[in-house]
Length: 433
Ligand code: HOZ
Image (cartoon, rainbow, N blue to C red; front, side, top):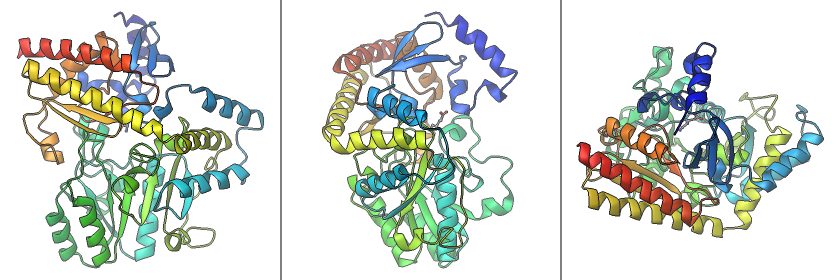
């Protein structure tokens, strides 16, 4: 494939935008080639500015759950835009959106819209601190909750990919209020609560960790977190920015049947436009200004275009539960096909999958349940695999520590093409290694 235009444009971008990108993972740094620049996308396919076409498994990191440029969503945005793009004042659609989220997410009684997942998580911990009167939060190694200071401690996603899990610029004082534990390790969580019994405001967790590659919660882990937070009167926050409306219409809280006190949302909730939200128990949410003292605001919060796109996407997902069954079937077909290819080529890899999320880890551990185990992955092999896949027209996450996202638009044919590209890439790797 020829990528000349992409490479030229990326050269230009680098002298104008730090690293040439507006979000670090996009720079392809960990896979050793310059990024391809995107021209457009439709359904499950994405097209670069050199005219190459790929089957897309990044799916804009989740939001394209109904496929790119889905007609119903594009129409809703156009219709909303004709009426004005921002008012900085309440609209009826915001209440309808709130009601839809409340109907879909079991643990959400009230919800506040913001503009990104980062805004949702940073606001949720401020609220948790105010509600409990405590300062510390507990997060898990390799979980990613956006880029607010309190979360850039042992963080996953781009921070893990670039080897900067603890970012400079976060003050020692802020870092000291964030406690960390290994994912899936209840003993460490319990021990931290024994040390700080009345200082931890909340545990924030990705109920399925999807920013260190896909790492599933062990049976009893999420239930254990719920029990510990109840015992110590701390709050449990599920960061459902990735799992919300993806593991099912009711997110991970419905999938695993656990009620967190607060939930943070993003990605799918905007139907491809920049939206985040946080919600949960009414008694906690009512502490927010203007009825309570906890301040949080935003001119573009509840933006009419974003509400129109997000509402349309969520309504389609609510009304068509078969979408989830079909996405899962495709994900299982892909995961099983990759496992078969692995057996035939003898490469040391692990495939994790839940719902429509998948990661192929180049990793010799037989089980990957923590940051430490995920971090042992062979990132050079992943880079080779990524480049071979790209050449075969498969667009994967440019990092070992992210997921592949299946959408409603992926077809059986897409999966078959992906599996034969996967086989070819694994065969080449097995010859080299
Ligand atoms: N943090 C995102 C992946 N988990 C990447 C966002 C982006 O680069 O668009």
